[in-house]
Length: 173
Image (cartoon, rainbow, N blue to C red; front, side, top):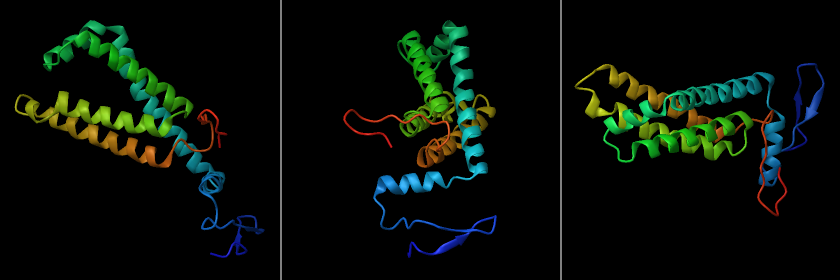
């Protein structure tokens, strides 16, 4: 692709768009993120807020009655229910921070997707459908949420209001 091609802008002025083919990977990411439109920015921020809100509600319910959460976990047949309830609460709190800040967003979204699949099978899976057919709806809903999390993991936190975290000795982009 010729980087000298001009693309018309909404105001009638032409701007050169840099070719992504010959750019290093770090530059490609910056070029793509810097061309994010307002509606894309808004959609990404709204999605991040929704993900954070879902996990914030979940962790809030756990902290309000950790005993009830442990009882629910024990009823599903898991050992050490109180320990697992606290582990789930800590994980969910960390996911809230990651989704709100944008830091570690992609790994957090992948971890959240795996966690939600685990929850779907453990608490709403096929073994629960005979007793209550509404459990099937809850089971399917988990996969819709997982699809959103995986989509978010692929596209990242966006370029606005997203913390960047670099490795030691490396400059953050």
